[in-house]
Amino acid sequence: MKVKKINFIVLLSLSLGIWVSCKSINPIVTSTDPNIIGSWEGCDGRVVTFYTNENGEIEGRYSKLGGLGRYKFTLDEVGFHLSQKSPGTYVGQVKWRNTLGKETWKDETIIVKENVLETSSSDDCSKELTRVEQK
Image (cartoon, rainbow, N blue to C red; front, top):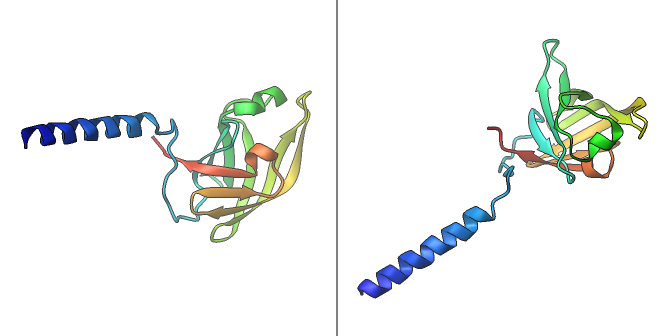
């Protein structure tokens, strides 16, 4: 009986060790909240943090650049100006830059469904972003 208990404890310990080591650095939050406020990660490691500014407008700033560095984006740069159209739907503009750093603004619609933020006008690594845990 004692050997079975020890084997069970060893197996449980190994399982937990493997599970913990496989967790993402920025774990996805399980949420049904259609609110955009918070941080969202793209496929290249970029992170956009959305917040409400002092004028009540929603802005998105880059808190990690990922692949955006090659387009001369900078940390904490505003890349989105949005307003809420309805729960989970936001409209406004997204900043684009070419490889020389020249910026333009494009119309943008964002839909938030649970842990996923879908954009209409962003590049491939911003078409779908996932909500990340706030620390």
